Image 1 (cartoon, rainbow, N blue to C red):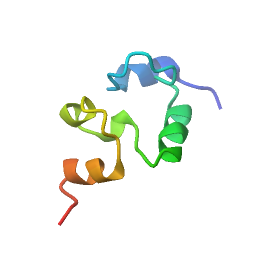
Image 2: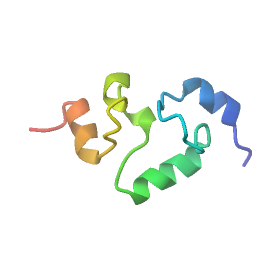
Image 3: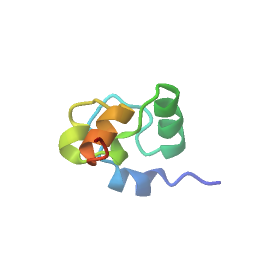
Length: 66
């Protein structure tokens, strides 16, 4: 499968500038899941900027906690 890095970059909301995985979604997702996190694109921009990519942060951001 061909990577569509340039197209992915147009939609990537990651603000972590030294990231070498920007636009390479398969690598980004694999990296974050190994750390029990989700990538930036799963979060609203204001939450993404906190760099808290935990599952718990995701649940809070989308109102999935009770």
